[in-house]
Amino acid sequence: MADETNNSLINLGDISKPADTLIKKVSKAVGGIFEPYQIKRIAKAEAEAAVIKVQAEIQITELHRRAMHRFIEEEATKQKNIEDITNKAIPLLEEKTDAEKMNDDWVTNFFDKSRIVSDKEMQGLWASVLAGEANAPGTYSKRTVNYLGDLDRADADLFTKLCSFGWMVGNVVPLIFDVQKSIYTDNGINFNALSHLESIGLIQFENLSGFRRLGLPKKFYVVYYGQPLMLEMPNDEGNELELGHVLLTKVGQELAPICGSKPVDGFFDYVKEQWKAHIPTPVTEQGAPGDAPHAARP
Image (cartoon, rainbow, N blue to C red; front, top):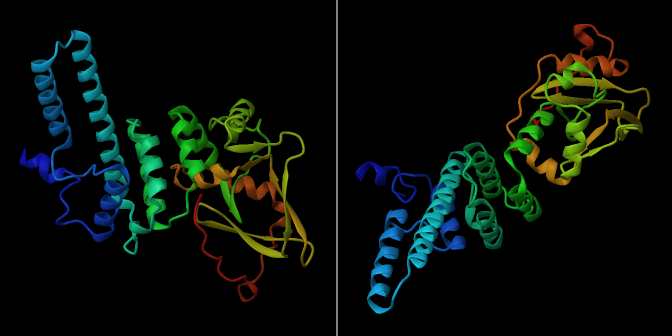
């Protein structure tokens, strides 16, 4: 029992202040879920005591007993899911985080949707959302949280594959220039996959005309997982850049940075070839451009 207690979320003595604040915030919004007890064990004991008490007063059928035990097990599972997600979120908190600034209704809605999630990888995604909102309240809309509640593992994995092609071009843009090319199809992205992601609201897919970024300056940087690429356009201002056939929706934009995507081998060079008309001619060291600005990866 000592080991279980030492590993429990409820032991707050040696954890950081941001973690302590987050746990208290979750407890307040959800209803005291981290009281200093072994929740599952106490819940079972109290429910069983209630059964015994009621049995002494009225006739309980076998159906009632089965329903009671089912309810206990379901609630214990939901409780474990809540604690697992919160546990996974704690290491992602920033030192300056003040979880008390999180909206109570947002937290309540978050756990109302996430408490049924037992898949470990999906719990990791939920934990990233919880920590991200704690670090910067307002980062994730209620709409995105509700959407995540309906997102299954297969769709999440497909979205992660798409985000592996994501470049920072102001925001995250999956650069899909020709969906039939092997660099896409070999990595799980094809016409049907994109059509499905559009149908569930994560992307806009325009297979014919595609999308463009407008109003660009003469020189600017785009970034692929920390690797910058400088582009040079023909005009001093008001330039356009082809972005391929896919844009992320608002929900997709919020989920892209935490989906766990990784860069695709060879894709940086593939994009350079697509944009070769905008790649500056190499210059001497004296005339070399300055360092690329830092940009977060997708």
